[in-house]
Every structure is written in C-alpha cells, then in structure tokens.
Image 1 (cartoon, helix red, strand yellow):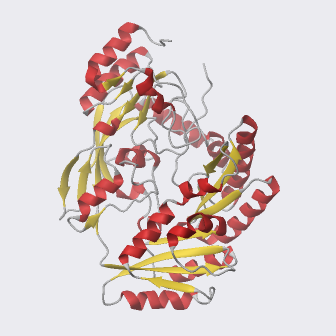
Image 2: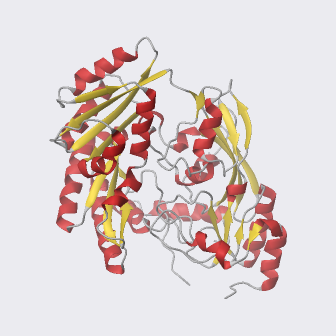
Image 3: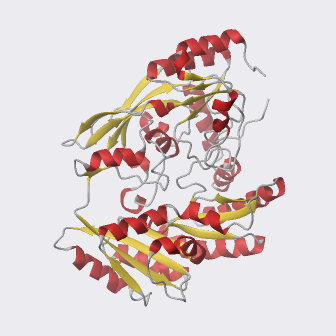
Length: 471
C-alpha cells in the first residue's frame, strides 16, 4: 500500500534518477533485514545514488514532504540500525564505492562510503600501508557503515576505534545541505568538531558521502602468542602485565571453550584438555627485535599459563586470524535447532575491570539459564556475550532482560553498553539506563537537540538511538 502520494514519489525518483531506484517488491525484500535479528518494514523505494548531489536532492524533497529515510551500505549492522522502523524510503550507498585520493606522505586516503574495508586494505597493501579499524565483518562492512557505528575490531587495543582515524568528511544533512567537515591535516583548531558528531550517529543526522581517513604503514614483522587458561581472571592478569611491561599488542583476544570448540577445526593447533579460555596476542616489531619482544611477553604470560604456542608463519597466522573473525558465524553450528538464533552482545569496561566483570556476567547468565558464550577484545575490555535463544516473542523478551542485567554490570564497572556495534533499536533502553545511572539523562536531550539541527523534520533513521513514540 502506498504511504506517500504518487506526486512525491515521482519527485524522489526524478531526483535520484530512475536507473538508481528499486521499485519491485522482490528487489526490496532484502532490505527488510540486516545482519541483526531485528526485522524492519519494506521500503517504499530503495534509492542507490551515484553522488552526493542526488542524495541532497532526494533529502530536500523528503524533508519538505515528511518522507522518512533510512541509510544503509553493507547491511552488516548488528543492532537493527539499517532497517526501517517507520514507513519511508531507504538510501543504499553501495554504488558510491570509489577511492578518490591517496597521499602517502601525508598518510591519508579519501573514500566514498560504499568502499568495503577489506577492499580498501587490499588497495593500500600495494603501497605497504593499511587502514587500522578492523571489525570482524570487514569483508562486507564499508567505510560509511563503520563510521556510522564507530566500529572497532580486533586491532582496537593498539589503534582504537574508527573515531581515531577520521580526519574529515563530506556529509548531506537531513534537510539536504551538503557540508564539508574536518581537514586533511592531523591537527586543527577551528571551532566545534562536527566530524566527531557524525561518527557513531547511525544515519540519524544525514548521509555520509565521502571520508578522509588516516592510514598507517604496515608492521614490519608480526608474531602471535596463543596461551591457554583455566580461569578468566588469569587471562586478564596476563594481558595487563604484558601491557604494563610496555608491550602494546596489535591484537589481544580471548575466547571461552565453546567459542574455541566452534572454530577448533580451523585453528589446527593442539589445545590442552584443561582449557577454558584462550588468549591470542599479536606482537609486532622489526625483523631484528621481534623474537626479543615475543620472548619478553612469553616470560610474563608463563606466570599464568603453562601452555604457550608461538607462531610466526604468516600463512598459519592468517588462517587463525580468519577463524577468530568468523567465530560468531561458527557459533551458529552450536544451535540446538533451526529456530534458535545467536544474538551477539557488545559492551566494554576499563581493562582493569574485565576479570571481575566477566565473572559477574557468567553468574548472571547461569541465573537466567540461557546458553551463552563469551569472546572479545580483552586488550581494550570489549566483551561479546553470544546468546542462544529461540526467535519468539518470549525468547527475545528473555534476551532483553539478560542484556539489561549484563549492561548494569558493565555500567557498575565504569563501562558502556555499546563498544562498537552502535545502539540501533536493540539498545535504546540500555543507553537510557546508562545515562540514568550516570545521573545525566540531560545528555540524551542534548543529543536530540543536535539531531534537530541536522535533521529539523525528523526524517532520518527514526527510532534509532533514541526511544520514539510510534505515531
């Protein structure tokens, strides 16, 4: 059933160009879902623009006529941020997938939002550079999507999240104004940092159309340490001691036994029978000093683990790295039936709070009698609780209750309810709870006021980040 008048629809189609619009139900059905378990509405139209001017023209018409707009690129969102919660259209930026400029001496690359992260790094590798943010979905995720959620990933312990790597952007606001933010320089002091506002905004302020990204030279040499533990607190102490010794790993990951079991065949290593947790650390250095740093880290870790494996073979390291990045999808093999889904949680606490936080989360999972596995980025305190549940109203209600309890544990330990997946619609209540606990609910009101400046007609990705009462 048509939601908007045929005249408005025609204006939108003309602005986008008919060849850039999907009309049929069959073409639009894939956009009812993203990588999350949260379904959405069928879009009235799917717009796949070629440039920022088409997007600006479309958004001007939409803002003038109250047409809701959802933005999407790779569709890898895990909190429902790229599906429609209100009737409207969807803008898919995947056709805008060009690398526009590369400057090695100034260490930046300029990209459109549809560039996939792995493709970007394949391109940069030819010049011995890379773009550090590395979400597990990097094969499918894009520059635009990763900026919209402030994605992190395995390398965040060394390089931080996406926000650390964005110098500037071209952006179309909700009312169709094209703006440029930031600079090509590492330092700037020129008023408010509008670029920072766009990062993590999940399409609620407008549409990113171009980004200036910082890049880094590839590490000269890298080695990997795998260590095995009975207790998660020992894992936390081991990585803490390594960092305190002045060794900042490239990656520092932990996995519990169920997660290890899900990828055991891909790891191709001997895992001690007592293992309940595995620690994976990558260390980089020059060819001359790599083994010296690895040996130093080994000595520290041996205080907590009797079994340590060192790997420097690049092919084997890549195989293990790929297995870890595929851990979530591998867990699907452990479902009890076809109706069961795996919901991936995402929270973060200061690294020093991690051992106690993990113990409390484990107890809470046991109390709720729900199957869940734990893995994550132990170097920066990021925990992913992967919850197995039947996709029913009662099942999702049980997960929501558990997620709230886990969130409260993170908040108690000075953490945040979302580390790298964003808020979407899944974590509206969790975000509210975090600011309530901080006695800072007015912060959410300030965010809404900022949204109103960028999107005065409230058409952009409605229902995401904030609660919004349905009409």
